[in-house]
Amino acid sequence: MMQDTLQTDVLVIGSGLGGLAAAWQAAKRGCHVTLLTRAANAAESNTDRAQGGIIYRAPGETPEQLETDILTVGGGLSSPDAARLLSREGPRLVKEILIDELGVPFDPSAEDPALPDLTREAGHSLARIVHHKDQTGAAIERAFLDRVRAHPNVKTIANATAVDLLTVSHHSLEPTDVYRLLTCVGAYVLDRQTEKIFSLLAKETILATGGLGKLFLHTTNPPGARGDGIAMAYRAGARCMNMQYIQFHPTALLAPDGCFLISETVRGEGGRLVDRQGREFMQKFHPDGSLAPRDIAARAIYQTMLETGEPCMYLDITHKPAEHLRERFPGIYAVCMERGIDMTREPIPVVPAAHYSCGGIATDDRGRTTVERLRAAGEVACTGLQGANRLASTSLLECLVWGTRAGADAAEGILRGDDFYFPKVADWRYEREPADPALISQDWLTIQHTMWNYCGLIRSERRLNRAMRILRELDLEIARFYEKCEVSDSMIGLRNGILTAFLILEAAQQSRESRGCHYRIN
Ligand SMILES: Cc1cc2nc3c(=O)[nH]c(=O)nc-3n(C[C@H](O)[C@H](O)[C@H](O)COP(=O)(O)OP(=O)(O)OC[C@H]3O[C@@H](n4cnc5c(N)ncnc54)[C@H](O)[C@@H]3O)c2cc1C
Image 1 (cartoon, rainbow, N blue to C red):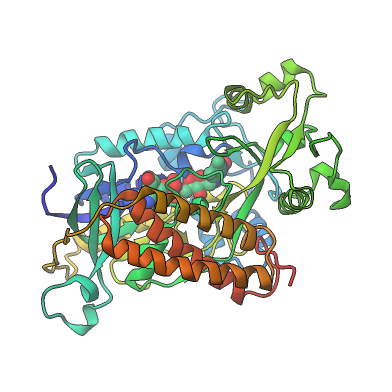
Image 2 (image 1 turned 30 degrees about the vertical axis):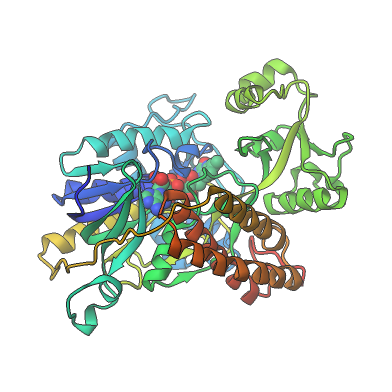
């Protein structure tokens, strides 16, 4: 049973790579860290799902080469400072933290087993990505989580959802100095087991709640990726930016229990995109046909689904020998088989899926937001690195670099004895009725279908306006619903989901030009 109020030096919300990197640095410097995560299984995260790898460095490579690749893919919107920082610090941190400190088992090179194998992905001018089979994220997550949890300065609270950030302006019960108003002092947290809400007061709070794929009908993200951190930060007064830039992956396996990412290497190895009748349709959209770039392939699949009324298209690689496919794609083969699809004999049903949010809470090079003592790291943040589009495999490295910097800088301020204080905050009030799950379920469907069709891969003024009308009405309903009902994890997610959807929608409306992964037909 949790107390009504807890105190900590550094509160880290989220246990993916961004949160773990921050918690690790703060704990190592001697701060007391509370690591909070909403899932009962602390490893459940986008990080755990990452397949391809994390950027390291090619032999003889200079930081400028990576910087150039990031800026090229970012569609002119990436911050040169952020790209420079990542290119200079990133490879060093991969070596020092992931390889030397944690011993993440990256696959060894065939030529020299003392070195990691390096692969190349789309948009990279060199082979500079290290990986662990096709399960790199899980290898990093498990190694890091074990070490962080075992650190004596870290208290991990799983199965607990942050409800709202505590700020002096909104929650302090004491008269306050006007300069402190926009200061974060922790969060209200729902203990999902007891269903009680407690206050967790912190000298520094670091949001690392990940992405927002759940807002769309199809996504590669886990169900907890619903924009919680962005919504909480926005309500607390933080600036969010570049919210319109949502990257869609062209091929995710369509299955009743959610989508699973089918790596682009399947197309690279000769997989053909076909319709239900087995006809190739990509030549109409790009001279490279099924090998068209990611964004074009994703839009072409979506457009063809709309025109034919089909729920998916298909990725056909049955012309390759079965033995080769089983060896080359063991993970994908196994997941397809679990869902009753034998990719060696039949085409894989695929849909494009929301994959990565390039925008988020605006942060500087130390993860600081526009709210005092509130930082953000990882996919929830917008460091400016990704600009209008993300270079493959930069996101894990961005988590590592900014998580490390945010945790270290927060700890240094605390250890310097900066002027911190814990105000008295109001306890949560509980006179509420149980929420009707049918309403929550239908409201989510409305958000997901609206965002998918009107604010998804192909946007237009009419679609965006229609989405705005639908979501405005729904927002009023959800606000009334939230006021009256018991706060549960799903209610928290719904409230955050609708707000984050609005932020994306507003940004998409205001941004009239197509750029990077924001594509408008008018
Ligand atoms: C299928 C897939 C493949 C990918 N492949 C790659 C790749 O090969 N290389 C690469 O660089 N990137 C890849 N990415 C992207 C990358 O994995 C993510 O951007 C990155 O892992 C995000 O890490 P994070 O720490 O910011 O968030 P996450 O890893 O998503 O962690 C978020 C954490 O916050 C917690 N949380 C959320 N809301 C709350 C709340 N209200 N209260 C408490 N806790 C909360 C969650 O439970 C979770 O612990 C891939 C993504 C996906 C989905």
